Image (cartoon, rainbow, N blue to C red; front, side, top):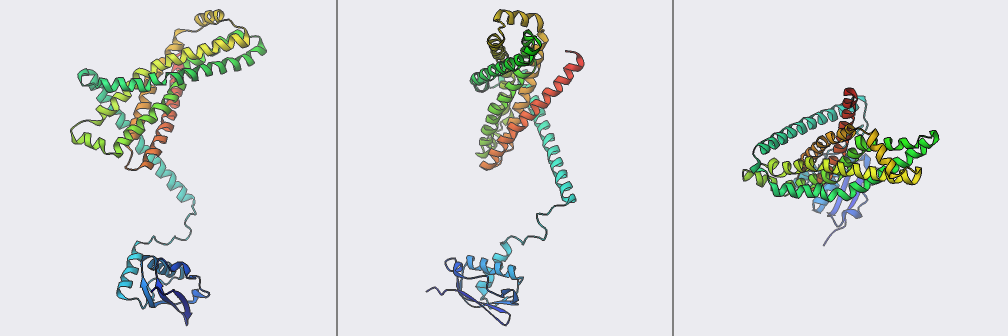
Length: 365
């Protein structure tokens, strides 16, 4: 029969009585008035004691500052109390959660060190992928053509609808906004130059790369990360196979081959959308749009965008596969690294585009 526990305080001795079990400790008023006057805790009248009861006693000890000043416990009870004390988290330190300038500087330093280490790791991974890719180009018989074609379909063909629609709408928006501004100066015809240069040189390939980073880069991380969680990559290594050659290179090569194609489709869709809106909003006929496009838009505007495409593809593929390789054995790691893959890919693509813009401006292209 279970005896209900109770607490009494007499002459500085806090006495616990009854059975301290998981089913009974909730009925105890652990905030006994004047309990802070206790100098020792007496467990001599405690009958049965389980882990929940031991946790309650240890918590009471810490609250009153009486750790180690518990008397009357039987040998089994004392052993259980010691075990609970050893495994309970330590008390919070005074001032925990309050950060000063030293703590802030330390946090900045840790983040900088972590970012530097991650950068070195990504560069090393990229070197490994490029070396493997070069080796496969020299020995085409080792290329996994089935995997390559499959990934070309996934990252290229299946992405055509969203890329076309996005670029078409971007062209429409550029033409509409350009018409609104240029109409004030009677220079509506220059909307053709605005659309052509913006789409061919920058927005077409940049927005395509951003869509591919969010669509395919995250898919690479999720797929490789899932294989890492199921230990399939470890199985490949155990069989003497290179995971980079089998999993990473086909994905990266598929991106390098298909992103320029998607860029061309995006350019065409953007120009079509811009021409349609120019015709509706400004009365610039398709014939006038085409003639002005051919006469005032140099081939280098198109070339600049296409030169960027393989580099963007390499960035997206490397980051997506690298983050997949970093996944640990839990779903939380997979989700966080998939999000990190998308964010880092888009950031690096935009940063690379800025560097290309500076370079082409310096060389006068």
